[in-house]
Length: 112
Image 1 (spheres, rainbow, N blue to C red):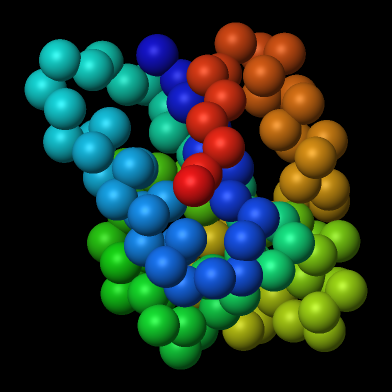
Image 2: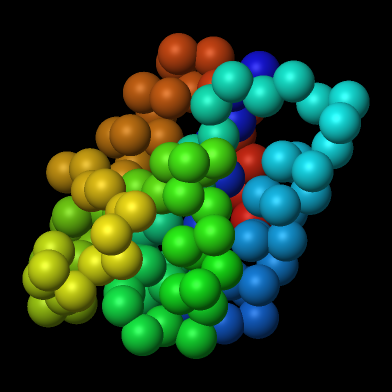
């Protein structure tokens, strides 16, 4: 199974909630996951910035989850790629990537 978690909130408690949901899926021995994506757009892109309150938790996902940040959102917030955590990749537009992943059969989970 493939899943994409979509996070758009800039609220740190929402980030915690989203990361807990991702971790719950990864830790569920009954769930057979092939690809898990955490995509942040809007104010949620701040989660992926070096020094964010949950940067350690995001780094801990490396190897298990593809973390994707929306370049449109990053640009709109003047966040350069160089400020992103090392395990974060970018996509041109988060909404386009979400649409593509859903078209490719990914389960879509809006978190929180």
